[in-house]
Image (tube, rainbow over all chains, first blue to last red; front, side, top):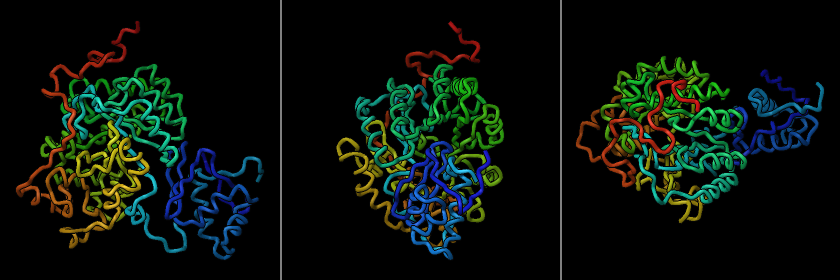
Length: 96
Length: 395
């Protein structure tokens, strides 16, 4: 399966088989389908991940978490990695 | 992933411990139909105090609350528990994935079909030789045929991506390519792990552990094939042989920090290779449940403190191997703040040559008299395993 490319202007959400476990450093993500574990290394990215589905696109989710536009690049990179590993999926109701 | 804000390395975070283990091993019974010479839990006979079905389910409920994503179930031979499949189903229904290790004794075509239908169960078949000769010398007569039959049944049922789990020894290290080929034959993934001097392994470690030259051979093989081979991150003592990061995986001892063991009577140990009073953190029945033991036991608190490099503090490779495996040092009678017995810089060998007092575990469920010469101990269903699957009468 080829994962789609991350696009900050699309609506993303956690894969339904992914669980998020809060930890002092951030969180652990586990995908029950792929059996892959990922680490979120700060609380801000955890907030972004958990609120993705409430926002029309990833960019506004980052803004809502207090990340200014100029500081969003590393967060977009992180989200891109999670899209590649199928932790995040594009909202199926949305057509690109 | 890397974020711009400076964050401590993940390894440093892990050394301080997590709110729940990532990798929890749960041994369901000390009963086993085999008597492997290196059994790290000295299994054989069932312990009369083993947890009841309800007690096991209570632990699963707790693991679900703690968001322990999956458990590695082992033993003993876990599938000989009459409630084994009930517990597997209960765990997966409660969002606790299961990977279980088995010698294959109960992986019949019917069981294989049931397993193939589940998305949340992984199966790991233990095999310590790519040929019956090498395997059976360690695991007992007939055990190679039994494991291969289980793999055949899984493949025939359409079970995807079984694991073949190999403990690397002096005698099978030249078979790594053969193991890989065997795994490919069954659409399986090869998993290789380190021989520990734990349990009965203490009795055979001197003869079975890979030689220094073989450690290098193993390291080179892992660097060349590591991406498609699982290791349970168990070879971190080899990290000093090359560039940092050349070995895939997290290279640190996770004992009491990210891993632990629940044994068949509910005792919680720092890791699966450390069944000894010194590494006993508490008991899930008498010490307030698993969550309490994990978060508050004195032993685990100590393990989450910064550890002393001791005799290794002057070594330039300490940051790579962090002194190696705690259990390997302990059960070979080496100091805990010194080199690993298989230290790749060669500091282990002189330490092993000194007078050592090897600690024995008080937990031993080995059958008296050792292994029977005729092969696996028949439990209920199986006598001697058939040479080929087709040799077994279908009626």
